[in-house]
Amino acid sequence: MKFKIQKPRGTKDILPEEQKFWQYIFDKIEKYAKSYNFNRLETPIIEFKDLFTHSIGEGTDIVEKEMYEVSRFNKTLIEEDDKDQMVLRPEYTAGIIRAYIENGMQSLPQPVKLFSCGPVFRYDRPQKGRYRQFWQFNLEIISDASPLTDTLLILLIWQIFQDLGLKEDIVIDINSIGCKACKPKIKKKITEYYKKYLDIVCDSCKKRFVTNPLRLFDCKEEKCQKIIAGAPQIIDNLCSDCKKHFTQVLEYLDELNIPYDLNLKLVRGLDYYTRTTFEFRDLKDSGRQSSLGGGGRYDNLIESYGGRSTPAIGFAGGIERIVEKIKEKNLKISDQKGPDVYIIQIGEKAKRKALILLKSMGEKGITATCSFGKESLKAQLKEANKLKSRISLIIGQREALDNSVIIKDMEDATQETIDIKDLENILLKKLRNE
Ligand code: AMP
Image (cartoon, protein in one colour):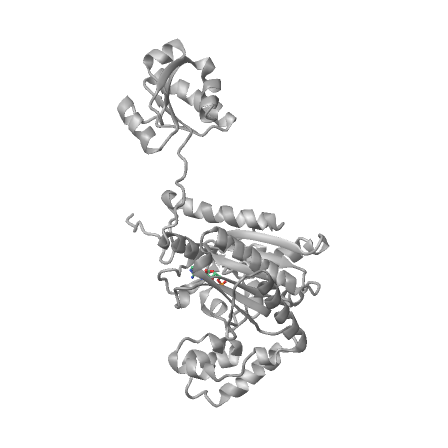
């Protein structure tokens, strides 16, 4: 059978040589998440479609055209799951909240702080910084309504970006889009204003007018931009509680010296957002792919799923875009370490000894490797150099017979023959630089 050896459009192989960037980012996320007492939660990649339709909202790009539906080949097998359509998750929050409710996390000490990191899927037109499968790191603080919490979350993300070496490259856009009480009134004000321009606006805006009026502010078309400029400001129409909440968030950010830009048109498309919305944006990039991460409050989502009324706030950052940014900046990330030990073996007897050594080193936590398919000393030494192993062990035919091993320090090129029973001690000393 002939088939193309080709990855699906919009996906990426994260090659071994790229892993150092990913690891660098994961390590920072984990370090800060843990220091602020977030616990890791991972949810399934497949979930029921309704979970997202309900939270993200009809009329959003994600729900209308970007979700991947999951189908099974052998549909004659009827399982309970077949009753409802399943999708690949297009984002994390809905699944996290489902897990929070389903696993009774309401009875844990609140707030519950959760972090996650994994792939999400959206069918979009692929280009630089825009993939169909991409990784997000996700942070949620559930059951805390205080504006201090909004600031705390922004602080944590700010510290991650700072520690990644990207502080100078990002700007935080922030806005408030109101609560259950004032958001509908704001939407009404905006639609009243837009009514007189409906003949002029683009087709997408005509749809947004009906399905999701706040998203009218997201339009990048030049003709619509002029209309956006004259539209009523959300901030002028917030209720007094929302105004107070937002003012406090900004004051706390000022106190912490975290710079931000008020972006009064930042609405973030998803239906579940309330009050504070924010985005970490690449300063130098004004395009659609400039957002490195975004988040906001969603104080009514848990209640709308049938849970107890519980305020919450979350954030999702895009790992591929951060990797690209780090590469673009030429930040020096130290190379992945090679194995501690490379075992060179010559002859059948030596191969068996190597196998036993691999087993005992694995048990001691020493990273060790070997190429059983290679026979010559030269080829194996070359491999050890390429892999940047710290030490090579050589077992030739003679060593295999008299139970000895040559230990070669790959850094200073010194070597000695030792009894195999002394190997562990000598090796550990060398690895600890004693
Ligand atoms: P969103 O859930 O749309 O707010 O996205 C959160 C973050 O995920 C964005 O700020 C991006 O960094 C990243 N992101 C969103 N869509 C894509 C995509 N198609 N490809 C790569 N990264 C993305």
